[in-house]
Every structure is written in structure tokens, then in C-alpha cells.
Amino acid sequence: MDLKKVKNTLLLPKTNFPLKNANHLENEKKIRDLWEERKIYQKILEKNKNNPSFILHSGPPYANGKIHLGHVLNFLVKDIIVRWQASMGHYTPFLLGWDAHGLPIEHKMLQVYPDKKNDLRPFCHQFACEQAQIQREQLKKLGLFTDYEKYYITSDKNYEAEQLRIFGEMVKKNLIYQGFRPIHWSCGHETALAEAEIEYYEKKDTSLYFKITLLENFFGKENVNLSVWTTQPWTIPANQLVAVKKSASYALVNYNEEYLITLEKSLNLLNNEERLAKVERIFLGEELLGKAYLHPYRKEIKGYIVDGSDFIEEGEGTGLVHLAPAFGAEDFAAAKKEKLVIECPLEPNGYFNEKIGIPEIINKHYSEVNNYIITDLEKRNLIIKKKIITHSYPHDWRDKSPLVYRLTKQWFIKVEAIKKELLKNIQEVKWYPNWTEEKMWQIITAREDWCISRQRKWGVPIPILYKNDEPILNSEIIDYVAEIVASRGSDCWFNGSILPLLREKFPNLINEKTVLGQDIMDVWLDSGVSHWCILKK
Image (cartoon, rainbow, N blue to C red):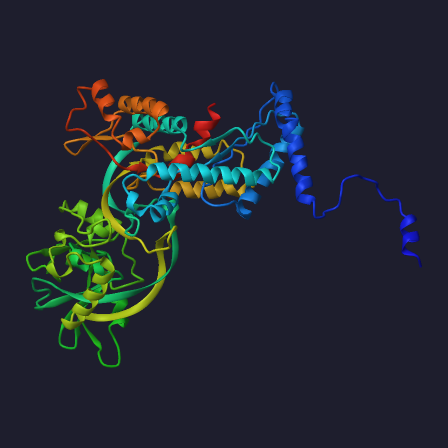
């Protein structure tokens, strides 16, 4: 059969539009250029400008690297929605934007310009702008329904100024405070991290059961040891307290002619083929409260036992938890309750300083100290049991390095103070699909105060000055800083050129001894306020 004749019997559509061929990229460009030349997007906006609006705000992608499939999916889904709403007659301006601050850009520039650590901002700014332009040209190939000549970028001075004004509004509402407490800390990048910057991976650690000696007789027995549990042996030198659960049952046992105290439910942890624990007495944890013990490393320090009922689980460990207030949230809370003096013996880079009070580990990295402590306790016959465990552990989302909890001063937003209002507002929104409403409810309910300060250079400054190390948190000053940044950009804060202007404007508040704070805002705050900075206009 002649195939050509069969083809001729079919009623096929006739079109000048070519099938995909070697010239398809060129043809696509011609179509895009035609739309741009005829300003189709602008004409449709003009046609619908007096009609009801449909605004789909595009949260800014990060200006670092070429676009990937995630960008494609994100923008095409939005583009479909915007085009549909435009076809329904709605006024649909769609504005592209880029998130241009943050550690990934700063880190990359440090690799390129390692000798420019203190003068890195111009290089970061140039790099971010270049990356945004690269992504803008790539997005053009998706044929998005937008004006590519109009876009926003978070490093723009007007955007930065608006962000500072928002910060000032939060100050007026008493939502900003400086907290001194342990938070997730990246020793590699020497900065605080927020919850959104943390990823959890499986990590191997040494689960250690070690002895701490009571300084007094207990139920008539001398030299009684507490069987204390930790998974971070490097924190033991910073011990200040031991916690028990006062309502739980504990056992005083004879363990190969020495007396140990452990949780009754954890007796099986002691028993093995060579040793068996003989129970001498069962008692409640409250019997231990206030008892003093000898610090494992610092003989001049006497620790004592406190109530940890809020966080001790009877299903794990020995029910006796070593507390190092500088390195744990629950540890810190317990120490504050006891009105203890708490200092941080760990430098931002992860090395111990003189405050640790133990010469052997000063100027040593905490990871090195971890191995030292395990070896030393073994030599001193203070380890009851140890084993390697695998558990979920927080890591830096950028370089995947494990984090530590570290005591430091940071700036926070009081999420707790506005939580009721947030939860109420959730009910006033229509959610698609509807199960996302419950998901958002759970997220907000569990959300703690937001740590917004970062010890970096490339970002929007937290506009707080310090006089005699005391912060000046003043909304009028912040509004004036925003005014200056709108004309000069935020570099004026970091090069100090803004300070004489502030002294002249506020002579009663700012003097020659007043200095500018050097923390920047969490980059998630930059993108998080984009709805206000952009939609307001």
C-alpha cells in the first residue's frame, strides 16, 4: 500500500507553526520577543486595571546559581494561575524578585576573596546582582507573564529601608528583645542559626554512663556515686548541676562493692555477665534534691541535684542527667531557676576559653575535648558503661556540619506574644487544600521565639547601638536610620559613616562612646517581609 495515499485520505490540520526542529530555540525566542515587543502583558494590565485585583506575590528565590527544576515548577505553576485570573478579567500584576543577602553568598565570596573578610560587602552585592540577572535571563525562556524590566531585589536600598521600618514597628510593639541563652550555633560559620536553617541527620555519638560522687552519706552509705548519663561528653567539664525526676523511683544498689544510684527502670543497664546490681533501697527522686556532689573536674566546685521533672523521660538513660547550662536549653532554664551565674566557656569557633577552668582543655576544639574526656574518665575508672548510638541530630543546612547549643546573646522576636493573634488569623484565611490549615496551626502552636540576629557581614543591619555595652532600642532612631539607608544604602552602617549623623540628630542619646551593633538580620526575615515591602506599593 502506498503510505502517501493513505495520508492523503486523512483530514489533517494545516498550520505554519513548525514541529520541533533544529531551529526550535530560535522560534521560541521570536515568540517571546514578539510578546515583549507588543507589550502584551502591559496591555492586559491596562485593560483590566479598573477591575478587581488578583495578586499572587512571588516570594524571592535566592540569587545564587542558575535556576533548576524547582524554580521551573514554582514559576510555571504561578504563571498558570496568573494567566487564568487575567483571562477572567482580573488585574494581575506579577512581580519577580530575588533574595540577595545571606551566608551562602558571603561564604562564596570569602572563598574568592579570603583577604577581604572585613570589606566583603561590595563583592557580595555585585555577585548577587549578577546572579539575579543570570536567573532573570533564564526565566525569560519560560515565557512568564510578567515585565522583566520591573523586579525587586532585597539588597536594594529602598527595600532595606522598608525592612528597617518594619523592624522599628516591632520595636514599638515591644516584640524585640535581647536574650542570653543557648541556641543552635554553627562553629564552622561562627554564627547563630534559626530553626529554618537546621536540618536533622543521623549522627553517631558516645552514650556515656559515668560516676559522680555525692559529698554526703546517703541512707547511711558512704562514697555513693550517681550514675549520670550524657550523649555529649565534651560538655562534662562545664557541668553545674545534676537533674532527677522527683516522682520517679530510683534504686540505691551495691555494684561490685561500690554504691550507685540509678533509675529503678534502668537497672538492666548495669547488669552483665561480670557484674550484677544488688538493690539496697528503692526511693523517690525527691530524696536526692539538694544533695551536693563533687565536680568531675573542678575540685573547687560543688554541684547539687535539682528537679528535672519537666524534661527527664523514664524510658531512657539513668534518670540522672548532667546539666551544662552553657550548652543546653533545659540545662540553662534549670540553672536560671537556681539563680546560678552562667558563663560561656566556648568561643564562637568551637574552642574552649579560660572560663572552662581546666588548663588541659583550654584552646582545644570541643570535638577534640570529647575524645579527651572519654579517655580520661576511663583512666580514672569513672565510666560505668559506654556505647555508640545513632540518633537524629541538628546540622547546618549549608555545609551539613553538626551544630552545638551555645550560650550567647542574640536578638529575638516575641512570637509567643503574638501567637494568639496568629492562630486567630489562620481561621480567617481560605486554605487549599483544607488540611494545610491544621498543618499551619500546628506549626504556629509549636513555634518558639525567633532568633533573628546573625554574626555576619552580608545582610541588613540590626539597627541597635550600644552605650557602655547596653543596647539602645529606640524606634525613633531606627526610623531615622531607615531614612538614611533609603538614600545611602546599608553600607553606611557597616563603614560607620552613619554614626556622625546619628550623634547630630540624637545628641542626648548618642555620644562619642556609643558604637554601632554589628549583627545582621536573619536572611529569612529579608524574604519574610517581602509581602509588605512590595505589595505596599
